Length: 330
Image (cartoon, rainbow, N blue to C red; front, side, top):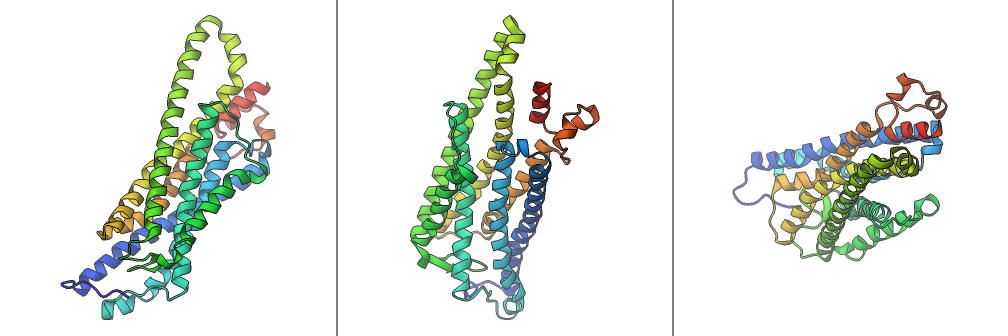
């Protein structure tokens, strides 16, 4: 346990405690609910609209919701012990965290699920760049194992090589305070490389979309019908990929507080508010992921047979690429 610093009163310690627990707990509970909603919507998509289930705009938010859910679940389990022992903090000014070896296990999964979240976004950003900029079709393999296997391997092997640096922090379990740990350095390098990769891919894909739009506009002036027939499938695909970009953009901003917190940890500078934000960063990204999902897919999902009936009232409740596919079928 960590004794409060000299000059700290119990009231100050309690204020720090509420900042670093209430903010993450609230946001991670919201993230769990949002992830559960995306799971439910994905199930409905699988049940009623299986033909479009493999669209990247459907799979990407679903995969991100899986990592969000796992991370938030670990955070809630971690803080549940600390919050349930708040009386010890009020009496002695000493926070209580999970004992060994449970704290080390929670710290391991805390770091692993953080890496899983960021590496998954980075990988899908790279795949999107390959498809749009390089025009290379990446085969994801059965059950998308070519994405999940390398991402999962790296996410668990990185904390495993420095497992001794995992354990009790002041209010939760993660990378131990006060150690120049290998895992902190590896985590910072991973965040920087992933963030640079995402930004690079995002900018290049946006530029490609802009260039294609300009080319199509000039071509349509000469032969509008032929161009639309020739490019209809590509247009639908690019609308789907444009949705993916909205999810990627959220995670560009999500990694900044994680990166700053890791830098401060390495130089042994601690800001309680930054700690709370870093523990909430993934859940904030997950809530934003839900917002983008509802914005892109709307609240309702309509079975394929209803879509193909061509009802105008139903068309208001289906997403854009489905309407385009319906038009092309007709």
